Amino acid sequence: MAANKEPSSIVPLLSRALHRIRSTPPRIIASPATQPRRAAVAIILRVSPPPTHVFPPAPQPMADGGSPANVPPPSLTEFFQLDWVNAPGARPEILFLRRERPDGQDGGRMSGSGPNSREAHVAFPGGKTEEGDEGGLYTAMRQTWEEIGLDLAESSYTPIGQLDDREITTSLGKRLLMILSPFVFLQLTPQTTAVDPSPGTTLHWVPLSVLLPRPVGDGPRWSSVSVDASSRLAPRHSTVLRLLVRLLVGSMKFPAILIPASPYPAPSLDEKAIDEKRAHVEAAGAAPGPLKREHSLQFRVRRGQDGETLKLWGLSLGMTLDLLAHMAPPEARRGTGGSTALLPPDAEAELLRVPVMAPSLASVFPRFGYPDVNFWIWVFGKRYRAVIRGWEASVRAGGTNDRRINWTGSALTTFYAAVRKALVVVIVVRAIFVLLGLLLGGWLLFLR
Image (tube, rainbow, N blue to C red; front, side):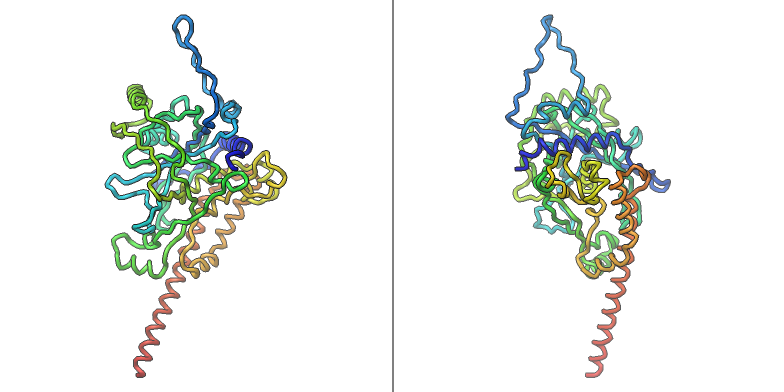
């Protein structure tokens, strides 16, 4: 079972990834003068100890009644040497959020999924950078506190580093909305501190094993998210044009990974601890910026709704795959196996041919419901394929000589440039066939 493999494979993989992230400078995208908006998210990881693990007794008070000296938090290397981290059954996990709109409309529902669908999408805590924020890391910590009441400035958490910046665009990549910076954090303690999510927000600690294929993990369950193409291509208030685009272009299908809806028990609620923590943070000014949280302490971590399917897709999927990409050992990046080979460091010989995940650049772009649209995207996608080949060569070489190249942005730009050309051709061809059909129908009607 995958649970028995985790201590010997996934924990060392996670250690490799976090050490690489800490030592590797990210690709930073400067905001253009025409669009200075930025955002940041927090990717929070923890190792959940096995339920049967026995911890040593807590330090006893000193004979004079004083408290023992504060124990400094472990370094990253020391953390992965702890007994409970390497205990059989220890489970590395990543935190995802599911958000709902406060007006009762489910913001977690995926567009195009239908009114009776039980699908919902997950994301990371975070949000837009506000005036007064000292940087992206500050924004990620502030937004996490405001959204779920988790103080990443506590000694129980340590910032690992930043993943590559990502561009958020609209109108098929033509207009830049903002630059997104993902920051990685690690929980250093076996117990998660009490949290207080905002209304409509639920927390899902997901084992990394569900994102990694066999034999390392349980195997990701790939699916897709259908999005109405007219929502991306036509003006929102033009009903006729949206219907026309929907008829001519169809839908877009984005790759997605199915996520279990909180199959593991949530920690118990300690409202007094939350009260004390909130008072301490607000009084000391440790929480960045003005707090916009409600004071209701109802604990909202719950199981997913019955029959609900959670999906990881889009930007969140891309950032998750960026994180997992750091698990590849150097020999896999330089040698055989290509860009998709992420190999466990202590793998047996037969495991060396097993890919662990798909490359993030190729796993987040959509396909269209009509085959001819995909065909014309391929015809016009020569530059996009060249970017993918360049990125694969960079991965194999370790990416040490091209840190300033924005592979994600280049792939996004060239892919959607091919999409725009393909849509023009498809619409023109369809219009020609419609016109020919009308002419033929009129001719036959005239002959009669």
